[in-house]
Structure formats: structure tokens, C-alpha cells
Image (tube, rainbow, N blue to C red; front, side, top):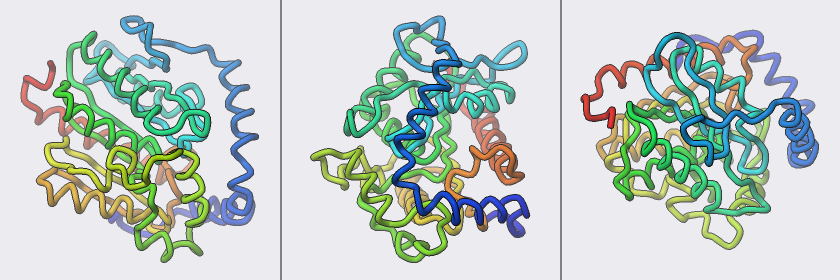
Length: 300
């Protein structure tokens, strides 16, 4: 658990979200999609030059050489979001010395599970075939859960595995069975249990919420790469993270968990918060430490 209490900026942000955003969260999908379309119109797509057939956003590392290729999987409940909408997050990792690629994936409800997983798996396979050197994965919210599902498919297919993964508030249980779904329902500044379950139904279509690739909390997590997980103490999704780390450890995975007081869901994306910068710095340190410890064959 992170030390100390929440910053004044975080407390003010939580109060704002609870009063003005949470009551309208389900109605925000359509206007956010319109905003996303506008941002994409103003921000041309930048595909990786060595894999132009893969849609997404390429942000090469600042400086002379990259420490690794970082796959960034954005969140948005599988209903909104795009690599260009979250380009600012990718750039933060590029400034830290990573070549960053955020693959585009199809969104629900137009494209239900496993569309997003198929898209990011194709992108990862293509990149590892085209590019030498180590890979790491970062994912937030739905992208965090998608990152775990992707690592499961990488393991199944025998692809070059990432050296490590850093996950922020990962959504790994679309069935919503964690105790925090009820315990934190009045404290979470963004979501209720009903919000989560309605979103999951839009994503799953006819698939079961306990499908281990849709909800990797139910999967065999053995032989996954080391992972760092950050989550807010008051999130309804808190126990997605606590149970993911516990199950990963039981399976022999090097998994670390930090629970941050008061922090809202996926606060790392709120760059104006001190805790966002602190969490991102810890993720970068974790990834670079695991890269330094990785055997030479991780380079592919």
C-alpha cells in the first residue's frame, strides 16, 4: 500500500467526480465517442513504419535508443477509447525511454468479445515477428484486463513473452463477484456495481462473464510475466486487483500490488494529480528493473 494519505488535488477531484460525473456515467458514452471522433480528426494516425498494416499509434522513444518496445492497451470499458485519444499517456512512457505502440482494437457494443483480444493479439504477433528486442505491456482499466488476457494468449501460442507488465485498476472480472463491488459502492467516485455489470453485458454479447479470456481472474495464471498492479482503495473494482495478484502469486508469478488511498479509478490518466505521476514513475521503475534482470533471450 502506498504511504500517507491522498493529496488535496486528488481529494478535490474525487469530490468533483462523485458530484458531477458519477450520476451521469452511463449517459456519457455517446458524447465521449463524439469527442473521441473530433480528437482523431485533429490527430492523424501514426502507424509503426515496420508494421503499417496494424492500426494504432506509434510513439518512438525520446533519445538515441529504446530500452524496450512497450505495448500500451488503453481503457474505456471496451466502449470508448482509442490510441490517439490516449496518445498523451503513450508519450509519457516514450519520454521514459520506451518505443510505445498502442494498438487499436474494435469497441463494443458493435464488436463484442473476443474482438478486442483478437485485434491486440494480431498486433502483438506482428510486432514480435517484425521487431527484435524485449517487450513490456502497460494497460489501464479495461486495457489492464485485456493485457492479462493477451498474456494468456501469448503463453498459449508460444509467442515471445513480454518481460513484465504494469496494470492500473485492471478490469479482470466481468461477472462482478469481488466483495468490493458492494463494499465500495457508496465510496467509488465513478462507478456503481450496476454500471459495471451493464457495461460487461454490452461487451460480452452472448459469452459467459466467467470465460477466462474475457475475465482472466478465472484463468490459469501460471507462467505469466512479472506484474505490478496499482488500484484505488475505494474502487468498486479494487478486488479485481487484489484477487488477480493473489491468484497470480498462488500460480508462482512475481506479482506486486499497491493500494492507493482515495485515488479514483485509473487515476494514472489524470496527469494533473501528483499520484498519477508517482504511480507512473513506479510503473516505469518496475518495468526497467525487470528488463535489467531479464535473461538475454528475452530480446528474441
